[in-house]
Length: 68
Ligand SMILES: [Zn+2]
Image 1 (cartoon, helix red, strand yellow):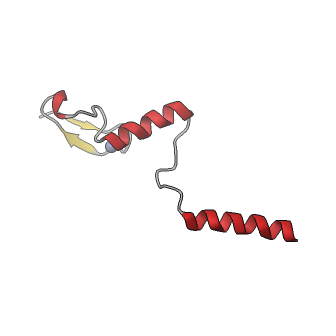
Image 2: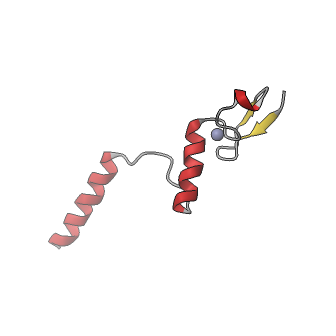
């Protein structure tokens, strides 16, 4: 069976025919979308979703600076 390395996450995966790999040449829809997004934005996106805690921290920091 042919082996291929996903161009996005570099994980090796195996397929019998291209039909078996609906997201060929990517291992998954996620990698396909990430790569597509990277092309559209012309840069790679952060893979983890922004977590609300980090946003809160940024907002608090902004307020702190305004108060000073
Ligand atoms: Zn992948």
